[in-house]
Amino acid sequence: MNSLYLWINIATFTFPLLLSFDKKVAFYKKWPTLLPAIAITGIVFLIWDQWFAVMDIWGFNAIYLSGYYIGELPIEEVMFFLTVPYACVFIYECLRAYIKHSETFEELYRWFTLLFFGIAITLLYWFNDKLYTAITCIVLTLMLGTHLMVIRRRYMSWFYFAFMVSLIPMLIVNGILTYKPIVYYNDAENMGLRLGSIPVEDFLYNMTMFVMCIGLYEWFNRLRLRRQLHPLKQSS
Image 1 (cartoon, rainbow, N blue to C red):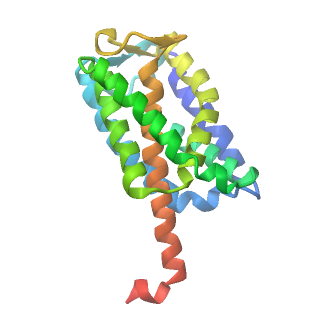
Image 2: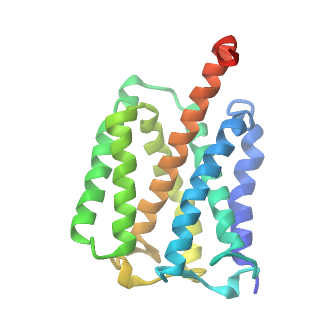
């Protein structure tokens, strides 16, 4: 056992953590709203992860693990749902801090949402017999449909921008996880299509996790702002 997965988690988390104190981004000030968003997202996805591990849809190679487990999940996999959402939301906030806002850009979220909604629906239609593909597409369509029809927040354009940027570290991290493999898959339950060693479903899975975390994060931000603007009303 060489704990490679643990070191991948540490590397994923260290860089955004150190840069969280950058004056322009000041990401550390967002921790009160970020941490509950990560916690809720993590609980949902750990339940999903545990279910898929029990169903042998994916599994973990003990050679690269420390040997500590929670249920069927190695402790490194549990850490993954802290380190990756933290890094993704950090990218999101950096883009919003350093790139000039544009009304036209922010209105593009509808088109991006329709695009990915259409991709998920199409894959669900053709591969509904593949459990990893089907469940991921169902949850993603529910998430995107809610943002498109109910929430309608323009921050989603920044989400898509951040997601595209996050594909760079994702290709590195997931590339290592699936190439070794640290995480292995039952290809009978996915499309069998891979980008390098990464199943295509992983990209949709990560988008689902990211959009849920961002949605909760922005909701907690709005709640915090309301409390600051109306402290007497909140206390009464």
